[in-house]
Length: 261
Image (cartoon, rainbow, N blue to C red):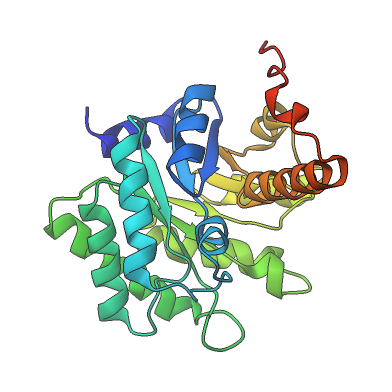
């Protein structure tokens, strides 16, 4: 079974797909060792770990090189966060998707936010882009490649539910495999989206939105945590560095790891 077919099967299983988000090889290996069945990269984590800010500020070749190393070093499927495609024009975005598929990933996230201006891509134009991407993937030997269409209405609209559902339907009809709605938190909204859209729903874990078993009952098919593990690790490193310098004592570096359960 290929990584692409494995990843698709995880979305079709009865259980919730809990996706771990990695930013480099050690984080990817840790997630795999911890039991995660698939990994999604975090563009925020990759960019910040290399000294860039998020928002497609990192050179795409460098970004893709990190993704490639992650794919090479784990045996579970990897989905790549491509933000809005790392380009402003459709041909280059499609080329970037194909280059990403070529390194062995099983899927991508592609969002409808604009990076070089404010707002969201026109719904129909974004649907057409997804259609072109799906067609290009199919014609290049990547059928069943997972396109997770990220909808950023909950980050940019005051009353986003109706437009979210409308965009989701357009994107799925255009070839998206699933939809990703980061920022949605209310049970009623999550249930409405999952009931009206015929594709797996991915949500982002947020404070107060953490229980995967409960989210599965609400209709969520995939749960991810984005950059939050990366942020937690950076905070741990900063605190550890502060403690080391303040105490002038390295004993904490040699304390045994807590027991695993």
